[in-house]
Image (cartoon, rainbow, N blue to C red):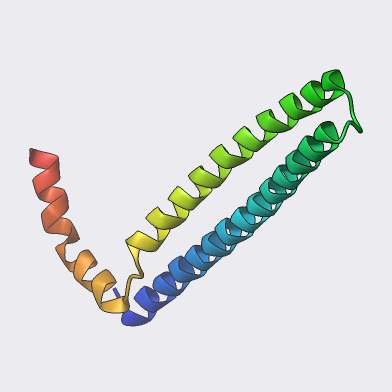
Length: 115
């Protein structure tokens, strides 16, 4: 296997990882921003209710819906941040690591096949 081919494969892997990282960062930013807006809206509803601007029935109806959305956004944010941690933990692969892995592939494959 030529080093050029290994370099090309490694570049493709790294490009794909950069795309994944950018997607995760964009998603986290979007969910976090949406969550902040919903939480600010909850605070406004609390204030409006305490000042008598909206009725208890209206308040409960609106707050219930928003709390469900906030809960869902928090779960999404948690999952995305967990994915990002796992992504960051994996680290980058360099050309020598790919070469070493390919050199040992046949040995490892043979052991796995016969066990």
